[in-house]
Length: 174
Image (spheres, rainbow, N blue to C red):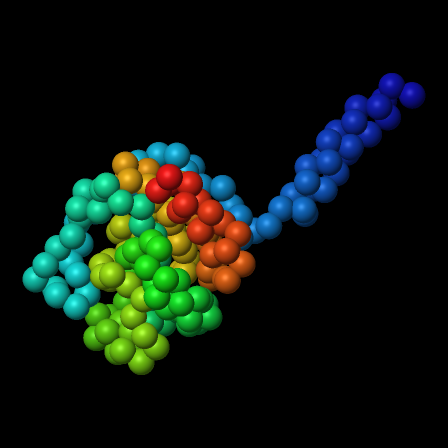
């Protein structure tokens, strides 16, 4: 009887972990950066390549960092949501144009609208790696002190804006 107990106990633990894992949303992958200072960057601005902006330039305000690319199909899906959010002028949206051609990115924004206060160019993807980008689009909410407070993997939806982003922005601006 004892020889069956250990394998059954191990099986029960494995089934428990699988059961919990199946209930998790893969879009809500916890980021080890939540609650930590946003990784530093100094990048050229898409529409003004001679100008660079760093994350320290953005301190003192709550802002969204949206990682996007003109070649990204899911970015097209979320883009109207970002355009509408930008019209509300509740939180500035900074774009991080990821592994893209600048001419393609500018044309894409001209065609679909530009929700960004500015887009920064991460042509080689180094800053994306520092932020732990799994793929585009991804969006980060960063507080006044430069600390990451929220991360969304995948397209931002109206529900995400209404239920997660706006309440957190209100709290952080409090």
